[in-house]
Length: 142
Image (cartoon, rainbow, N blue to C red; front, side):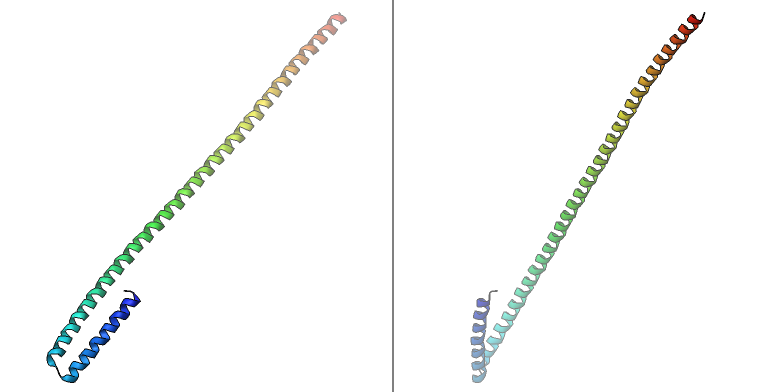
């Protein structure tokens, strides 16, 4: 209820109080009884309105709490999802790095094998050349 509405109600109640005071002064039992009945009805209506306001406020608070819980759950789910995505990206990056290292090792090993074959071929040719020289020396000596 807005402040202006409350002030209007306060003014109306003050006028009713003046009427009640006048009835008491004049000892008008019928007016007093009517005023009491009106006050009781007004009090019941006020209690009912307060109860309705209270129930609405409680419902709003419960709805707000449920909304907050849903928002928190959504936020946590989003954070968990991002964490899982970052973890998966790190796993892929590590696997990619391991593959790069393995490829580099394989390239080094192939290069070493090529060098070993080249050295072996050179040694074979050197041995053939040495054998030919030895055979030539032997023929020359006979």
